[in-house]
Image (cartoon, rainbow, N blue to C red; front, side, top):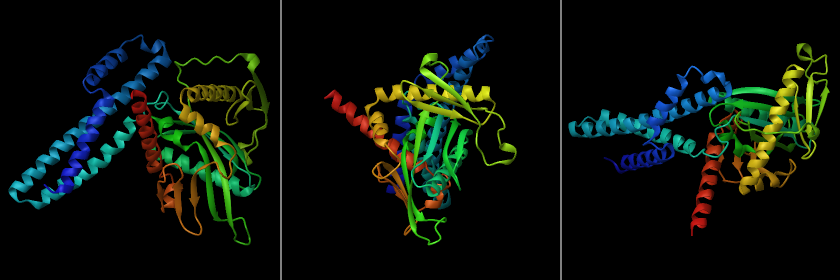
Length: 375
């Protein structure tokens, strides 16, 4: 076999080894059998929250086992085909098997990264908030571009996206928006996006066609699992109702249905303005609990805590990523130095490479910290 293919095979085997460790392969099939037996229990759905969590955990374990088996069998089958093709002098078989191994290596690398999403809340659904920085119409338009980018990314992942609230800009774009994004590891992937995002472009709103720099901030925090109890005393919150503003037409609210909840001890403010007042109150309270849960996670994780503390205002010195559309095309993450000239692809939701680079950096940092702690 060619040296390049031998290296690809070795890479896949290393990924399989890591996946087996993360999955605890020796016990995984037995754990799946136990979950299947629990699901067949007729009393399970008397506790809907527990049942839904079990179903979700069972699906994630089943998918992980299936992926491991797919990569393992794909590796063996294609190695056998290469050996057979070389023995019989059939270069077509060899070439097809080599291409299959290259594709398998990409899949294995992706699943290896996903296996590293093992933080306390990585598997949770997530809330994502976008706020325009100073700069009027320019920043409001940039915030709407970011919102579209994340919705596109989530849809490509097969995640469900629910708009929780939105405040339109005065002339264009949005001043703020909040989404709930639901799907496996939604928070684990998106958590690296928290920070300030900077855009450089020729403004479509400037009649002199000058270059403008705009900022918008993104904040990501996990949806609290039903089995995590967050108690908020009534005397620590203030609930206000107001009339939601919108683009007009059939979506205009004619009653004070929007809800704003302020957590007095921390100053956290959450809103919901898309449904009935009753539903908005439930949505806003869920968001508040998640924000408080995120604060607790931050206390346990100094690295995340430092990141949020340093985020500051949406302006110079706080950005995590730059999107330059003029005088050249470049998106660059300032933490990992990962970059691409495919700016349109990124703005259309191709964010996995940026998220993977940050995740790999975080994992490497944690590994070094653990190694230093053991010394």
